[in-house]
Each structure stands twice: as structure tokens, then as C-alpha cells.
Amino acid sequence: MNDGPSLPDLRRPNLLPAGTDLVRRMGDSALAMAWRVLQPGDRSAFVRADQPPLTRLRYRTDDGWSADLFHLPPVAGASGEPVILAHGLGGTHRDFALEAGRGLAVTLRAAGFSVYLFEHRGDPCAVPPPDAAPFSVDDLATRDLPAAIDRVVEHSGFPRVCWVGHGLGAQLYCLARAQGAEDRIAAASLIACPVRFESPASTLRAAGLVAALLPRGWVIPTRRMQQFFTPFVAAGGDVASPGTDGSRARGRLRHAAGDLHGGVVRQVARWVSEGALTDASGRLDVLHALRPALAQVVLPSEDPACPPGASEPLVERLQAECVRLPAGWGHLDPLLAEAAPEMVFAPVVSFLHRARGLTHHLA
Image (tube, rainbow, N blue to C red; front, side, top):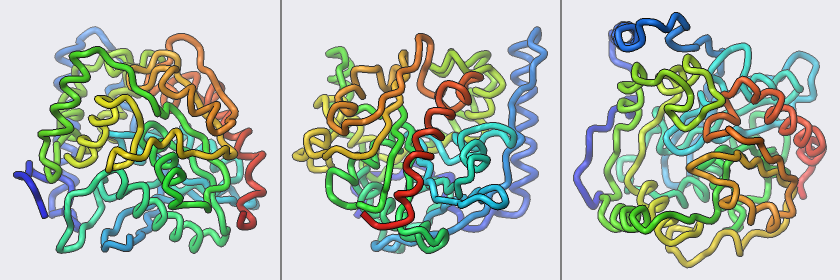
């Protein structure tokens, strides 16, 4: 049951209305013109948006939701072990596939993996059942994640998968593993995955209010907000990602932004206010419930959403391989920075190469 008023849900239609492509093109042109007015001396491209072609697959959860997996097949002749990429809070699958010639999805494809980009019930094309209730992060971890893996196992023919998560996408792995919801993930690379939170008193108070008062059924149209602010972004530093150039940062806001749901935001706000990654009840401390696993943890050095101390306990708990990024790496930089292929993609591919044989059999 919806326990609060609903903001306009701008993402839900199953079929795009006539004229949507024209409206999108007009919106792109208007944003580009606004950017040129605001940045008259900058001759660089407004956005980078030559995106790779993806095949859409659907999966259905046990409570009636359906959502998307976007597939990028391996190069011809490759063994094609499945890797699922899961985006962070406020993003979409395009965080991994913003440009046709680069990105983690394209890199993994070239390395011989079959790549699946995970979306969940909070994402643009998810379709709820008629009796859908507000949901939490737990629903993404214990309902959507296993259902998506079912679909990938069926499609790929492999009994196990590898997982690469950024931000919330990495936390979903931790929640699922801590609650015993999923044992078919052979290995996981976790990028900017906070499990502990330290914030000023003012932030804690604000987070506590959000956790207590935000209606669980609200949909906050942050996708439109991010797109609206695209012309004001001159460099990656404007979105806490100093290693990402301006056109790529703007492309991310324009093409990979997502909305936020009240139940998800409330749970994340409670993590901040209470200082720990927990389940929806607040009784399960995820870090303490985790067991050692074949995992890799990537630590950005200057990520305001995930400073190094927020993820470091995860390295010890999982007995994980650790990739520490040098000074100047922010939240989106591990996916979009100019140096990301060398500093992040290469270690992730190397780690997954060592794990790929584990996808051929059940644990």
C-alpha cells in the first residue's frame, strides 16, 4: 500500500508514446544550446553519446515485477562466461556503456565475457504488478538480483555468474550475500562500496529526518533534474568526478541518469544516520554477516559518497583483493575517467579472468 503521495513518475510507460524520439531530440538541442550560451569559450563536444548496441532481455521476480537486462555478447570465438554489471544509486546501465568504443562493458566483451547490464524495479523500464507496494533496497537484493541471475543462467548456459557492482550495485551483492539470498555469484568486483559511514552531525540529523519522514511511495524525478543541470557542468569536478572530462560527465547526466524511489532513499539515509550498511529492518549489520569470498574491492581516493575508510572494512571481512586508486579519483571516475581503462578496467578484467572457470560449475 502506498503510504504517501506520489511525485510524477516519468519513467514507467511500457510503450513510448508517438513523438518521443522527436521530443528527445528537441530536448538534446535545447540543452546543447543552453550549454553553448553558458560556456561560449568551450569548443569541446557537448556530450559523448555514441553508445554500443545492446540486446534487451526481460526477467520477472517472484512478486510480479519485470525489469531489464541489457546484453552485450562476447567477441566471436570467445568462451563467453557471464558477467553482470550493476549500477549505482541515481544511475542506470549506461554508466557502464556510455560510449561505443570504451567503457567497462565493452572492455569485458573484448576480453571474452558475455556481459549483462542489470536494471531493477527502480529503473526506467521496470513494470510493476497491479498490486505493487513501495520497495526497499532489500527487495532489489533478495528479489530482483536472484531473478536476474535466473535469467542470465538460462540465457548463457552457465550455472554461475560473476558480478561487478558500482556503489549501490556493489552493496546489493553484500546485502544478498549477508542474507543468504544468492550463492551463484562465483566472484565479485565491488567498486566504491561503502559499508561504514562517518558524517558531520548536521548530515546525520538530515539523514535521520529523511529516513523517518520521506514517504516510501514517492518517486523523486532526479533523472530530469540531472538532465536539466547538464548545461551547467563544465568539468567532471562539478559532479565530484575530477578525472572525468566535461563532455563525458555531461553525457553521463544526459544519458545515464536515473530516478530515486522513496523506500530506497529512506534505507540509504538510515545507513548514513546509523553509520552502517544494514538490511531493511536495521537489525542485520551486513559487514558482520559476510563470509570470506572471492572478491575484489576498488577504493577511489576522494569519493564523497565512499571515502576509503567506508570500504576498507570490507577488504578484511571478505579477505578481498584491494585496488587503491591514487589521489584525485571521485565517484564516477572508476567508470568514466580517461585513465579508467588502465587503472580500473584492467585490474577488474584480470581478476575476473582468474575467476572465470568458477562459472562453469556450482559451488
